[in-house]
Length: 112
Length: 112
Image: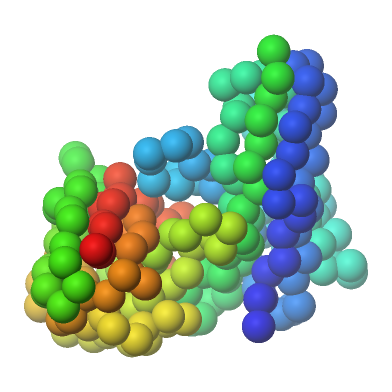
């Protein structure tokens, strides 16, 4: 059973537009929600992460919005650039749970 | 500080051959993980370790074995490779289960 559900599978956005990727989870014990960015031929790298004590976290053009009651969190990329073209994974984990649960990934293409 | 390194980067095997993938980290992390990445399926956890001398099964452990004899190394073994094991393999490490995972650059394995 997929613990974290991610959508959409792929996304095409014009340069300067807003990219939005959504994730939903069921386990209310999750307390760490990271987003990873992966470029072709590379390993995933942490982009931004949030814990459930805040509803939003912003780092530059990247923002996580977190809705605890709906058990959803999303990644917003403002002013999307061609260099943002990559695969994005959401994930969730909980203390003493021993592992992350990853979404299936979103392939983002930003058109110049 | 090299982070997480993986050896080899590429490998081609024939069905039935065996091989070992090596992962090394220099961050003194307790937790280490092996994932496989296949198109449209995201990152799937094969095995993980929560400390030296310990290993545990993940989501897709069949056909793989692991060992963690030293804290800094996590080995993934394929005893009798099958074409279904053609994939990109990533190793990761983390300080704890709900903190950032650091990924290696990946190993691209093809089984003919």
